[in-house]
Length: 192
Image (cartoon, rainbow, N blue to C red; front, top):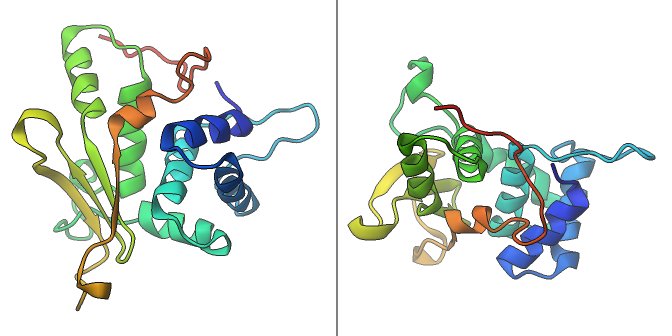
């Protein structure tokens, strides 16, 4: 497992952002309780949700003081078109979905079905709409980016500047965390 400082270093490298910027977002998320805080010799280890939270902060590019609130708002978005009280298997948040997606990417699968699921997860595109609370998950590869899931907060009456401002992150970015550094972000093996 990795520490917050290792996660900051790796996210900065993968997202090609200055370490100082990623560290400022991490500090804001730590202060809000969205990332773990190390105490003395007890170095806090990150979980899947911590990874998702820091990636979201960097992709959304909010002001540092608004980072925690923005990340919480986006990760709590619900699946579009699913009514309140729907069964759990179709009623999930963007944070829950992204956490499970990151889990599939960072596990070491056994069995052909799990390997295929991992390959599919690695190829998805995650679109963070920065001027309206929305996250869209698109398939990558041969089908040209069909929308798989859309998480959003209602419908906007108009778009700021009449266009969606998005940051697109591919599942490969998650796969590259700690690449060549011997870090295991999940530390689990999927069962057959």
